[in-house]
Length: 101
Image 1: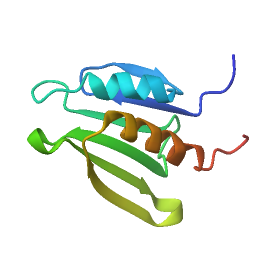
Image 2 (image 1 turned 45 degrees about the vertical axis):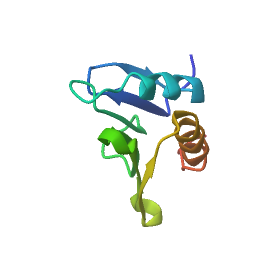
Image 3 (image 1 turned 90 degrees about the horizontal axis):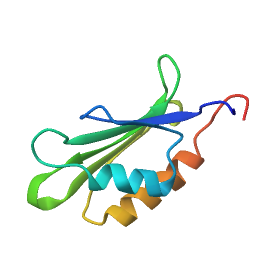
């Protein structure tokens, strides 16, 4: 089995190791406004330097946060398309640094 690079965790306790675009789509689709309001994706390491989160923002759709302290990046956007969110996060995560990869 290969090395784990990152993981996605949702508020309701779901966890997917190295999630694909489709897995992120499913996790975001499962979000709701009461007991499963966010998904966080981050490296599987102590003190990760980057993370991305998707949070239910009521009628406005989803708030997407991308933070990478190694690149001094911090972006907060609003989105309504789960397809677009999952694709954009997958592309963004592919550009992150993973030691040994």
